Image 1: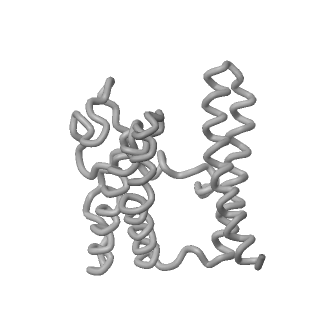
Image 2: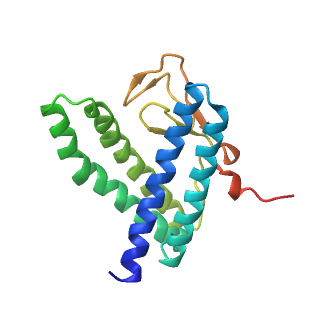
Amino acid sequence: MTTTDNLREAFAGESQANQKYRAFAKRAEQDGFPNIARLFRTTAEAERIHAEAHLRSMDGAGSTKDNLEAAKAGETYEYTTMYPPMFQRAQAENHRARTMFGFALKAEAVHAELYRRALEAVAQGKDLAETGFYLSPVCGHIEFGAPPANCPICGPKADGSWLKATPASLRSASDRVAA
């Protein structure tokens, strides 16, 4: 294997570890182990640091336009090629993954469209005009502007909750600049 192959593998592994440890932290919190949860969250952040360093070593982030094109292509692949057979197989097997596969399939199509809109703005030398970004904590659907009462993908929210995406709510601790 080449160093580039190793970087791809390391990036994938560190990215997966980050997500896995975040999920483990939630479970530790639910089980009444706040310090173990903190250990998982801290380690998850360390894995994110590793993944970002590997991505930089691969020159994996380019201009905003290049990044938007790559993101749109990735989301398009997911909803046109990756998720359809996964969703069909899970349905055929009556596997519980069918719900999230179905949600993801639909949400990825929305994400691709949002990236398309962002690309249009960048082509005009502008940022997105929308400032309100809302995320469904159930299915991953994103809404610009004001969120509807019912998510178009996962339906009614039991508590009407949408996560309002603000710079502070989305920025990880290591991204914050010390005053």
